Image (cartoon, rainbow over all chains, first blue to last red; front, side, top):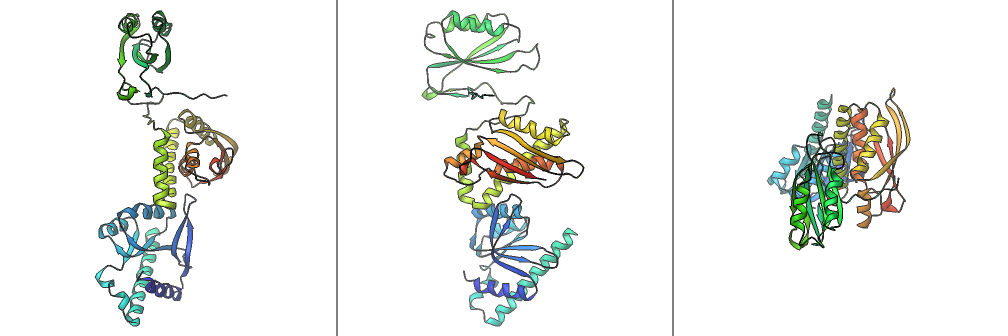
Length: 141
Length: 266
């Protein structure tokens, strides 16, 4: 997918910020079933985890399996996709599954972004993830 | 105990049978009197189903399936004679449906002894549903089955607590018997080690003829396959002890074992 380069940058950025990033890892859910994720990001200070899936598109037929993984792993989940149906995005958001789509106008030019802008973009996303992790921490406190 | 299948007369193939609903007051000898009418007309009774009566003053329902052979000329008189039995309130004939299928249209809903509605589904329907979930949803689908089972288990824990069950061993024993009576599986508790003071323990359950794994085996799955049942066991125990329990299926008929075996860690 066109965003893979972006993800590589994002992983680098997260690692530089002290996160532990596992590529192509499994998380065992409450059910004992092991779920595959493209990236698992862990905050070493809090032990909190975030799971990332990278896929081409997310449509209604994918919602059930994404939610089942979310329920079973009890870990916030971010789906990065080239194409995300807007109504699916809202539906998943309500269940603590976040989507990053490259079909949005602001991301559509990603593949042609100069490297400086790409860096800026990944820094922004990394900051968002940091905010997200701290939001979970305060919600759970 | 050598178990025998219970044939539910809800769907009988073939137009060679007739079905009769008989409402009768529960009195000693009433069944004998009704069946004696069938004997009198030389009609072969193939099966009889009963529903328990709520009180001795209220009529109970009997569903009789008889061989059609020999009924043609005598059916009207036979039904009249049954109706004339002192304790009989009514008799109705269930008409065969197309293809000669005799389908019970009288009993609804199906309830257990606690009055809880039960749903009868043949395993073919479950097989299709399990296959769909596994094939289309992959590992998340298996997790979904587990959580569905867990929700059911939590419900049973709540129900049995309300009924006064206070001991985990009693809870498991009752549920194993309940599962058998509802055709889900035959199970036994082969290891029980639970300390209520620490709320920790380990249980091992051995399960025979588990529908979920039989279905998986028929579909060609060769790995532990009882995700819904595992979830039910987990939910049952978690709902009772108030904490998470891990349930692993160590042995499974789908992968060639003689039985399925579950280890519960609390």
